[in-house]
Amino acid sequence: MKKNYRSLILMLTFLTRIPFPMSFEFNKEDYARGIFYFPVIGALIGGLLLPLILIQPYVPERIFPFISIILYVCIVGGIHIDGIGDLFDGIFSARDQKRMLEIMSDSHIGAFGVVGMILYFLGMYVGLLEVAQLEEFALILFCMPLVGRSIALISAGFSRYAKDDGLGKAVVDRVKPKDAIVVAISLVGICVWFAPMIGLSVGMTLMLMLFITWRIHRILDGITGDVLGALVEISQVIFVIVTSILIRI
Image (cartoon, rainbow, N blue to C red; front, side, top):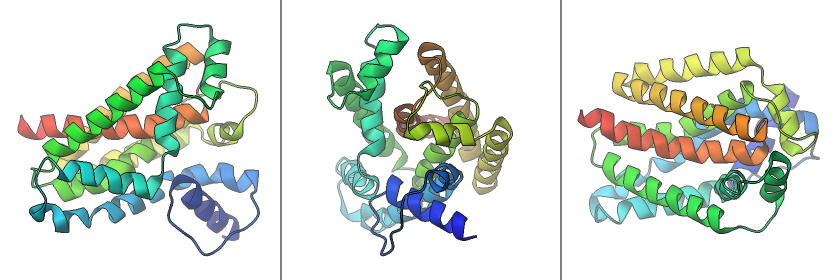
């Protein structure tokens, strides 16, 4: 129980900027085990976003998504968003696999990374602008970070690590396909229970993200920690856009 508690707190402090009044020595085993708490932390982030519903009636509709994105970034920081820049710089460099991984490890951001981050924020803004007008907005807002972090865990379960070492290797190696299947079924099932249309949107998002994961896997011969972070954010954008389309059909 103590190990699970350490893993949860370690992931909470790693994946968010939520202050926690307790610290302990980093342990690689606790860190690797922490990936199973991704959905829990996603649900926590979703809950922290829900107060936005209270201010929505008083904010112009085109400004509200901007405020929502600011609050989200304040909660999670830029760790996963940085992964989008690294991923785009690497896979769009048209180099060999080894050089792509080197580019992704570089702390500097290139032109493709900038384009990727612009597309991310634009997609998030447009998606939130659309779903903010829906009756199910509170549920969508809660599910968005839950979906993103659950899909990262699921993708890790069907992937191998692209490098011989790295902080993300222990995390990716920890998740097995059977774990990913259980999380996928649970995620879709819970969302269907909340609202069938949301469940359908989650299912479609999951299929799209598994395809994207497969393509990245083919290009890099695996995934990295940067890829996992990028998958979190990309899946959230896809989720809100797919949801806004499906609910209007």
